Structures are given as C-alpha cells and as structure tokens.
Image 1 (cartoon, one colour):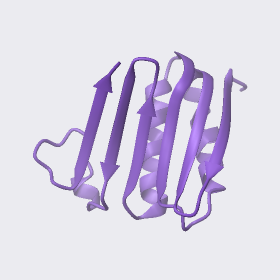
Image 2 (image 1 turned 120 degrees about the vertical axis):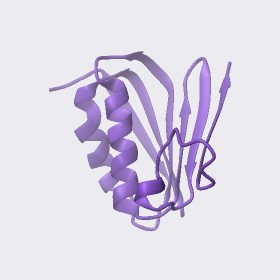
Image 3 (image 1 turned 60 degrees about the horizontal axis):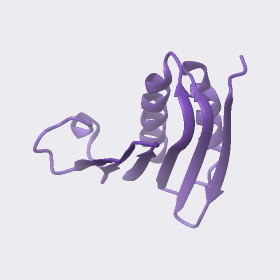
Length: 119
C-alpha cells in the first residue's frame, strides 16, 4: 500500500534525523522501520521531525509508537526522539532504562523525560 508520506534521512556520527512530510498513516510503520534498519549501528540517537506532516491518517500514532518501540528494542541504548509539528515541539529522552521502566507517561521516573512546547 502506498501512502502520501515522503521522507529524507540525515545521518551523522552518533545521531540521525528522519524528516517526514505529507500524510502519516498506520500503513507507514513497516516502511519507517525499514528505513531505520539502514541506519548504522553506532547511531544511538534518532530525531523524528514531523514538522512537514500535513495530516495524521488512521493509525498514525500507532506508527509513531511502533517506531519508538522498534528503535528502543534494536539499539539497546538510550535514545532521543524529537517530535515537531506546526503547533507542537516535544522531545522524549530515554537514557537506557530497563524495559520495565521504559514507560513514556511514568511520573517521577528518573530514567525518562518528555518535554514539550505548544507553539
């Protein structure tokens, strides 16, 4: 299935930025994970930039969750995901917490942080 999502990938020594544009849908999960598989193993920081995403189709948030889970499970290290849109900038940082502690909405957990700003 083809969706209206375009992407570009910028890879540095220890970090990568995945820029998405157009419509993000549930069907994009496998494509985005395939892109992440091509990122060299030494890269442990991923920034996901959604600033150019114009529409979130059915299942889009599941796609983002799937990508976060895939990155965490395959890299086995801390990571940083930055979400940016026209109205919101948010960063999720996981500093290598154990799987049982990796909960994005955990209150008082010293291992992860979510910061955001509404524009």
